[in-house]
Length: 291
Image 1 (cartoon, rainbow, N blue to C red):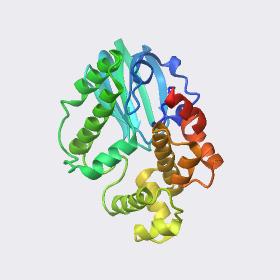
Image 2 (image 1 turned 90 degrees about the vertical axis):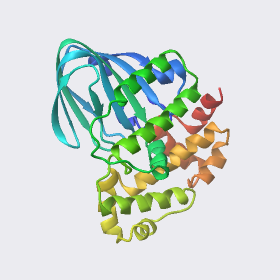
Image 3 (image 1 turned 180 degrees about the horizontal axis):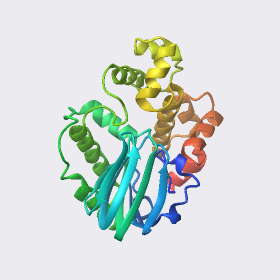
Image 4 (image 1 turned 30 degrees about the vertical axis):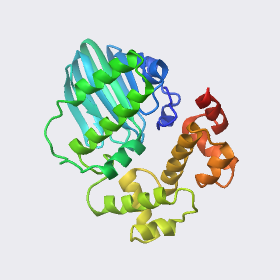
């Protein structure tokens, strides 16, 4: 499985993609996009089950051709769909997804991953829409158009702008909070802690600091945060720091300077976290980014 720098795809390491699909397009390989990861797939005629690990990315997909029956299990349990062109799917960030299908005609699909940091930032700046809005006539043709643009090797800036637009569409059409988070006070408390993380990304932060921002005891905060985001506060903070580190490395900063600015105790600490998140050392990433 392809892994781009800004995308949470580490859990796909070892995933036997060729057993289920043939990839026809990768926006990373064809167009060099860094803000969107767009893929086209031709699917095998049938499958027993595809287990997709949890990811913090916002993963959207649309069927572009085919017929048959599909069952998908994510945050809402098992759902059954007729396979038709234009069928949309959306994995819940932080929640594993299982897919079963049988086809009576060859099936193809387009998949788009939007990094969580883009959606979170746009969500903080955009008036949210109602989460119960019916239908979404725009999304399926939009995903297909993005794949066409990537196939034509559109400039990476096209992907950057498209990511912003797609994030805004997700926020205004599906609501303002993170798509993986429950409603109500728990979400607000988790968001307060994440806001503090972003505000003090380079500073030492304790569990007590984050719990205080959420007006909770440390024990209760741990439970609330994990239920709202699907990961521990420490893991979430490290993820934010590593993604900021990637952005700074893209801008030409040195590994030593980035480690200090992003709250890592040493360049080796950054290197360990960066390798776990992206599969490469920051020094390797920096060389590739500048190449």
